[in-house]
Image (cartoon, rainbow, N blue to C red; front, side, top):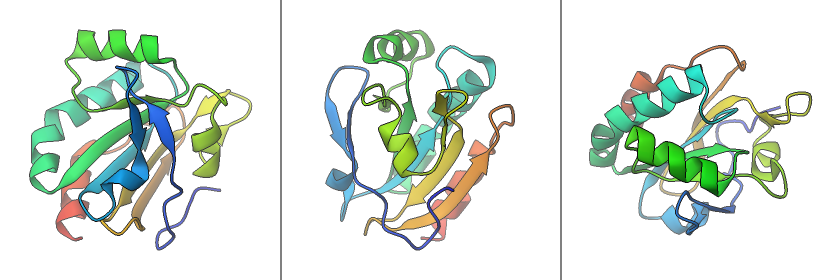
Length: 152
């Protein structure tokens, strides 16, 4: 079961596509966070969502939000994908221990061995204010996140 709204977001540190550690708690008091879990890099729906976030990135940044996208893929795969797609926000590798952060957020699919499509919008105090949990084959509505952030 996915983390519910009103709860504190579980903290974590994961490497981004450049092997830099990114800690969720470092944004507390500074920025809102759009935390997006996706199953696999280099796949159709995942690519369309990650690119949609890329296209919305400037508007989300103006709303004091940082985008963090997480999958079980490796740092090396993320780096290549970020270069190919022009992604500048962190793609985080929940590679080892395999899916640990996705499990903490309740979106790890044991049968698939990867995260499902989970979205968590976290306010500056570290509280989850919006959640969305979509099945693996169902695309999420990335364009609605700016509206949610405006309400925080």
